[in-house]
Length: 202
Image 1 (cartoon, rainbow, N blue to C red):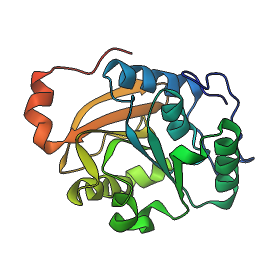
Image 2 (image 1 turned 180 degrees about the vertical axis):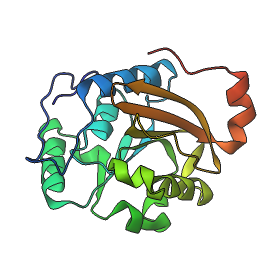
Image 3 (image 1 turned 135 degrees about the vertical axis):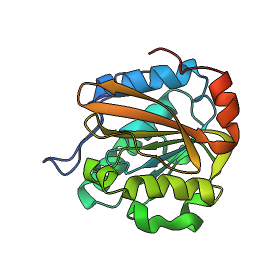
């Protein structure tokens, strides 16, 4: 696993052994950030990486020009890999680790580093099926942890229907093999999002 673009392109990232952590594949990350960069979302962004695991998504954002990343993870093996990857890239001054379960991090912990311009969530896929992941995304919007023009991306199984996350508005879903990426925007921009048509092609 490696960074796919930007300043740290091709830098190798550490991942814990076993299947407890499922890092986003290089192919999907490259596609995701191609879309986000085409939409001019990444440069200078304050990023929130939920269920961060190895930190690959948040660190990819930093490599491609994001200003700062808050990474939420609590599994010990994943945290060890995350800290090692931050040290390898030398981005300690632009990262904040929240070593808590996402569902217990709470609005105070997350909103204190926001508002965020980009939120990327890659939860264990069963949490999407149970609705826990969408409740987390909804909570960010309700408690004003998102910037007005924020983008929110949820990675989930392609076999799962894209969930609603009110008051966020679902914009579009892209599928890559067994992985799907669903993009959301704050509801206040819903009319404009429709008027501005579809996401950039990847």
